[in-house]
Length: 525
Image (tube, rainbow, N blue to C red; front, side):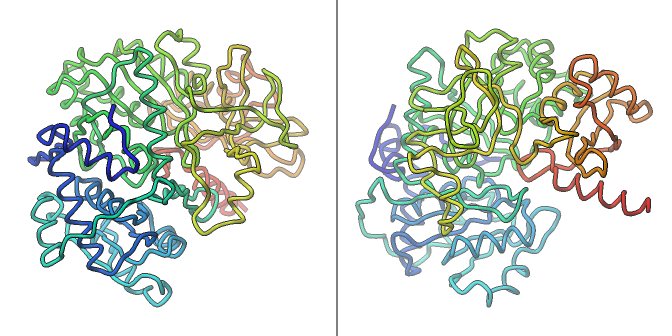
């Protein structure tokens, strides 16, 4: 595996080793590692000509195309820090990120998700963004030709000076989805990204086969999976096939046409593939392994992948703040995959603590805390939030609840902020949700806590039925849950949905569900 002192030099080493190796395929365009490195140098010169210097922030409000990754590595080459902004974000989130990051330069698509006019939004708020000095706007067709776009943008810019970028310099700000408040920016140093790649590569030294061809369909490059894990691809010199959006039929065709042996997906994406009405028309026999991550994975989904695709399933646990934490092993039995998110990856320390930050024994539920060289160093421009999240011993407090079993496997029980107390008893929504997904009438489910005058809080289930004309009743679901779990864990209310609202990272949007409950409650009064 390749090694370097910073992420920009890691790309330079890859280009030296095999400049003709394919890094990306996007539509009709093929980008080699030699192209990627040379174009990153061009962007570095452009940034320098704009007056940016080490430590300054570049914001990318861009679609997930090769240009995004060239712009990211170009910034890294001259010690700049990149803040990615998800195109699915809306006004409040975009302005919060631009303000919190104190970005001096913005490279952005003129329009975004659902036709949102990004240029009008940002330009109208420029007076409230005093650090933002320059904005460059691009139309969608320009992203199809990466070389041409770079030539036009960098015309007249001289080469940047050769700089020694230290591993302790910041390189990326990865913003949280903001589902519990304003987005916070997890800051990663060059050495954090390199450490993450090294930790990941240790798994392959233990006998796993690296993924040489990866399908990136509709994923946001502003997410942790690209911003913090880009070093994994570069160090392995693997290739990504980029799709503009997640289209189940196109993904199925790609698996069949490219004979892909591996697929990584969010749980909601995997469900869409399995439920696609034409799935049987595609030859998916090449698919040997499926990685599910980015959100809690229901046991029923794991069983469906194994049963219907005949693929080995692996699961992992990470977050915006911790980069990498746990992963399943090839030898793990199916039941272990259904109940846990694997063991801590070698190089990562993980433990469960109580409210006093004291370690808990196996089997007891508490907060998951992680310590490794691959975690964030803190929240960008937010010292108070950093102090609340990273303790004096360097443990990152995830806000997730779980327990370790006797064999060291992590069992998640949901978010601390989502746990509710019904009549004096703790209820973890994830436990109930996972069981709901086993009901024959349920396609998707989420449980949120809502106030109750008698019990304090109760659980309200939101369900997308498998068949619209045959939705489950609340009593059916309560009986089903009551057969496996304590009576106080049964949902007290039910709302049937045509579709589940999702966050920008394809997780159930529980804030939107609570708002929906409040709206319907108000309309009933």
